[in-house]
Length: 212
Image (tube, rainbow, N blue to C red):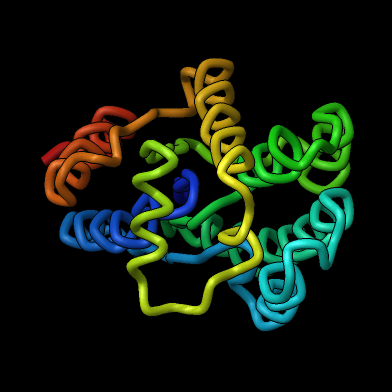
């Protein structure tokens, strides 16, 4: 039996990393083998590309150039890690996937969505996640969380507020257009409440395999 692919999406400070770790523990407790990864990155080569696109000043790359770098990294990640893991029957949890490109480089960055869809078709064909969990938080809440971290600030965390508002709107539009795949979760709830809601969504979505 092949595994399942779940992606976590959301703007800056949405809490994706925390919830991926929580879902990993939940699935592992059910006897499921889980692989966690992230985008851009997830493999040695893709991590090099991550540094190129994430670090530096905001104007380092155009949105179109960012998109091309993202899909180069994505292609290798899918080919060398995600698809092999799924074939082995493992579940893959990814911090971001193609919806991030649609939102950051498309809705907020200005690359025509038709171009992104075309490149996605060329690189991935019909491959995509079985379930996408979108953690939604107000823009100011997310930015406040980012500011409180003791971490290096990425290029994508240095944009104007209007950029992040477009990111949030883009995610909500994607969820509206893909109701079977995407679930929006209120990320302003406590971490425990968000985790419990995610567990309920995952159990319902994959009920036959997660039944007690």
